[in-house]
Length: 376
Image 1 (cartoon, rainbow, N blue to C red):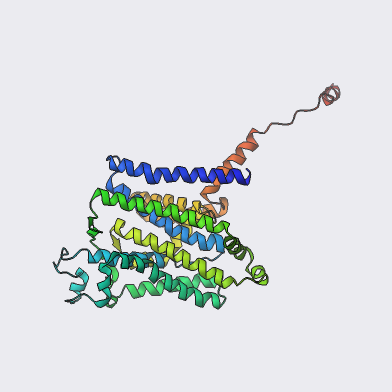
Image 2: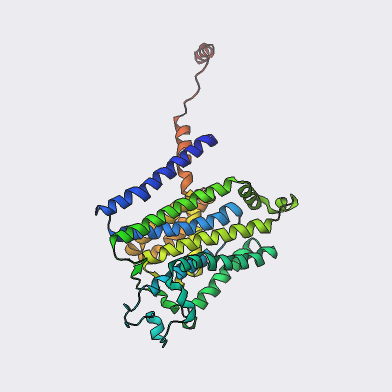
């Protein structure tokens, strides 16, 4: 297929998926066909799709394998979670105007840094600001030191591990190992209401679409071309006069913000956020989603995140002891036999069909009598 035909096919596929996710499923939910539980589960899958897009933007388009994207995902969730905890008011188990875990720790008043999170705009600002600053500082130090390859992956994993240990501590006053839960309201609306559940799901689906369109646009710009050149040969880009550290830093921060937005949308739909979401295995799972879906395609990571998490939901119920074996086996099979990921399956099937449908070329009329004479 030509490049134009591929673009048209991709646009048609994205439009069809967007119509299904943004229009059809909410309509089915509004009419009682899809339950609150299932629309929340699909909202969670789409939040993970944002995490997968952030991984692909780094790994698939820039060649930076980050094993710390779950950190930014969780930080976004915590920033939104602090606002949701403030909205509980005195409806907690202890009937006090501060979060239950603070009462359990002996606090009588709200810590000062919790006060501004009663404002949704402030919490939304923190969703972008906190992960963005951490990504900028870490990326600046790492890229200035020209750390890349496996060393960069190890450093991002170490950052995530250190952060998870810190968040597990009760004296951080962020819920310890239990994190935040028991949310009740958002912007004055009950989180238990079907309309609120549906609105959160639609917001998540629209955010995934916008993130996809933004990353697709970015990949087609001059910046995106330099970004992909860094992936294919950073030394050549350096010799061409480009400051690759600046490009990588920008992409690293953008990817962190996309992951943080996914975490912020994840928290109210799942109803909990805790340090377990930022552990290293979560980032490794996201890498598997991207590899299975199709690295460097943007649509592939979305497909990989949704399909693998749907498989996980089924497998952890049917075969709970075999889930990690299934995940590892799937990753190995894709790497060995389907390196292009799930998005490459239609093209492979089309190629196979063309080979099967090809007929032997007809022989010229003048050659047929000669063959017959030889046979006789």
